Structure formats: C-alpha cells, structure tokens
Length: 448
Image (cartoon, rainbow, N blue to C red; front, top):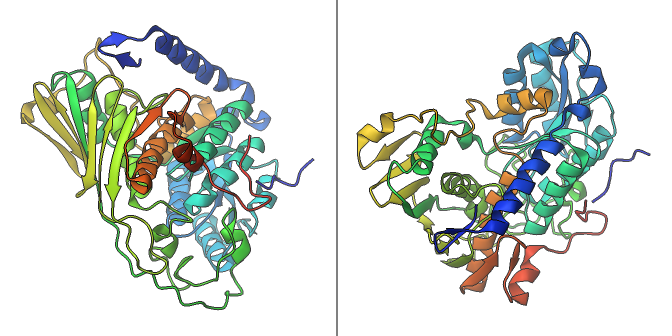
C-alpha cells in the first residue's frame, strides 16, 4: 500500500481454559491500546474539553457524503471538517460546497484527489473512509500509520488478510477505529442481544440470518474516462480494466454504483448486508471480538450478466464451537435467535419475540449489559476524546466481516469448510486458505 509521503470459547459445554486466557489477554491489550497517552497534544490542557476535533472525509460519494454530514452534525461546535478527498473531482468539489454551506462561504475546506497527501497533514485528528470495499483496508492502514483516528464504512476490509493487517496497524499506532456497523447504536438490536445474552429465551440453540438479494444488469460497454475521474487511483489494488461508468459510479447524481455488483471490488450482499447481520448474530452469541464459526457450508447462484458477477440467492449453515448453529438465506434483512424457551428477532424497524412481554425486559444490575450507544458517529467522536474503544472497534469489525468472507469462500468452493477462529485459517485446506487474500497491484499491498 502506498504510504503517506512523509518522512469464552466453549467446547461440549465446558469452559476452555486457554480460550479464557486469550480473551483476558485481548481485553488487556485493548485497554492498553486505548491508553490516553496518544491524545493529540493540542487537545490536552486546561481548555481541552472545548478544543475542536479536526476531521477529513476520504470518499465523498453515495455513502461518504452521508458519513461526512453525520460527522458534522454529531460533532456540532466540537468538530470541524477541514478537508475532503475523492478520486472524482466533481464529487470532491460538491462535498466542499456542502461543508462551506454549513460553516460559511469563508470557511477553508481543502480538496484532495489523493488520500496520501491528506494523510500527510499533521493537523488532522481523524478521518472518515467511505470508498469502495477493495480500497478500505489499504487506506485505513495508511491512516493508522499516520496517527489518524478512523471511522470506516463496513465491511472493514475485502479480505481476511487485509483485516488482520488493519487490526495490527490500529493497535500498534494506538488510534481509535469505529466500524460503521450502525445497527449497534439501535436500541432494537442492543436490547435483542441483551435478551439473548441473559437467556430470556432460554439457552441459545440456533440463529437464522436473512440478507437481501442483489439485482442488476451488468452493462459493460467501454467508455472514455471522464476528465474529472482519476480512474487508475480508483482501481487502487485491483488490476487494470476498461472504464465504463457502470463499473465505477454514476457521473450524474449519487445512485447505487456498479462496483457493488462486481466481485473484483465487492463480494456482494454477503458483505454488503451480511456485515451488518452477522455482526449482530455474533454480538448476541457473545463471540464478536475474538472468535467465529468452526464450520461453514454454503451454496449460491452466480449470474452471468456481464460485469455483474456477485452472488444472488444463497443458503448456508455454520456451526460454532459451543454447538450453536447459524443458518443463512435471502430474505428481509434481520436476525432471529432461537432458544430452548422461545425466540427473538431483530430488524431495523423493530424487534419481535415469541412473547411480547419479554420485549419490555431490561437488564438488572447483575445481568449482562451491552455497550449502549444511540449514535454511531457520535460515539466515535466521543471516543476520539476519551481514547476508549467505541461500540464497534477494529477487532469486532474484522471478526464480523470474517464471517462474511468465510461464507463467500464456501459459496465459491461449494463444499463444507472447517475454520480455526484462533489461527484464522481453514483447517488442512490449501485451496481455501489461498482465498484469504488476493494479489494486489504493485504499490498497493496491505501490510502493517
């Protein structure tokens, strides 16, 4: 990756002692990494609470504009958006106009086409990263090495190897990273997971995950590259390919971009929506920071529609070390937890249960209480100041995405896979392990 140009697992119902030790180590490591010694020096001092966080947005397209505006809105007077960056100069200029409208026509908003130049600045405290999936990890690692706190769109990375590198970079450089898994800041998902963790539905037996189905035409007619687009920078780690607007993003407006349906840049709905849903499944199961399934089997349909080559319908089954099974298929996005005494289902507009009365329950002093956040971006900004881990730190974002990637590899291979969540490798399966990363274009390798 080009750097900035400046000098309790359980087995058969019994607690695994080594796993407990590993969890304790991880927890201690995360606390150490969040030590306040890395607060930017200009935010220290008698008037520190009133100091302004200086942010920049990298990628200001369909999702990026929303993240940028969320940072401005959630931060209020305590945040200043000082720079924007996009490989499409029209989008970058549009974002700058939005910022000036918020702060006033005389406000200084620097515009960049190359994220490396932006990251070289020492007066920027944090960045939002909202680029295509295949660029996430490389830019985020560079941001961490530049000492910037990070709010990054899900999925955290394209590959598991990239995700591992990003975890290492974030902890090594002691920066804050918040994954944009905003469902965690919804009371429906939090309360639903608390119901499960406190066994209000009895002992958890199984989980059902539903993910929407993708659609698209896959048009591929070659077009001249627009003057306002640095297409080679957009390709980033991916190989050269003929330009078409349908591969990148619309030149008029902010409609859904074509890259979301092209496997070279995105794995499809399994990561697009799966990153949200599997995140909640593992939150409820209690293995979201340092584990995952031990076995996965999946089938999927991959259409022949020109550029569109991500999966459409799929079915999968995974098993965790404690015996809980998780089935997945297409449908209305949501997660259903099924226990010995009932069930609870969570989705974006609410939750449901076998007995509506349990939805009124709230954890007591001695019950499991999950991290409470009401605003994903606001939580990130607060953690930039406190140096505490946010609701979805880098390890959680990585493990949630890993479930998606493991499922995708199982789809491609069409057979049952054994996964070792401790080593983060498939068991005795060279072919599957070779799919944990992909060849990056020279200069765009992701290492930490």
